[in-house]
Image (cartoon, one colour):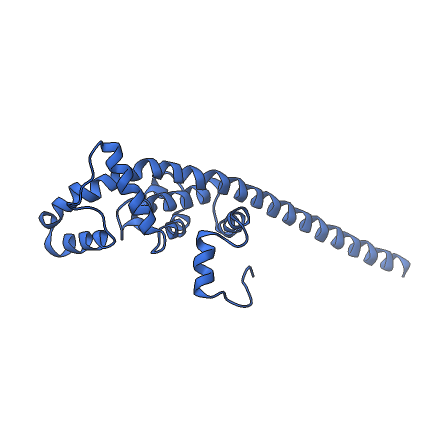
Length: 209
């Protein structure tokens, strides 16, 4: 269900990720339906996904699942939905996310960008590798010139991304739950009416005998 008979190629999937062929509106509704099938309230599901998506814009690669889960737990949102939301941050989007947060952070701090310790594609991988292998002292300079500005720049984007995902998904999931409840109620009434009709027919047959 909800799957294509023929899987699209890699290029088609990459293009669909940045510009969905079904349109952003339908893509968002499809995502809402998928989330709505998880157990939980509209708030918990939409909030959990929004926290996961927003956390993906913070420069803590490898910890997004944990941070998203903690935020979801703290605000009584769905932890599984937050894990799904972290998929917003992926190898295709991270270069754009890191570049945006880096430049925004420098602008917010009022600092002048220079070539010393400037952001590059391998900066994040090198930072966390050296942190684990050699300790804090080996990454102190990178943190002050790259990671800290990215963290500051990620904060307003975090709030913006949370709002962008939470409110549309909350509405879509709420509507889905209402439609599903109405469908279940209609099916229950239909089954009750059918059962009553069968009982009546059986009563008529017994009375005729």
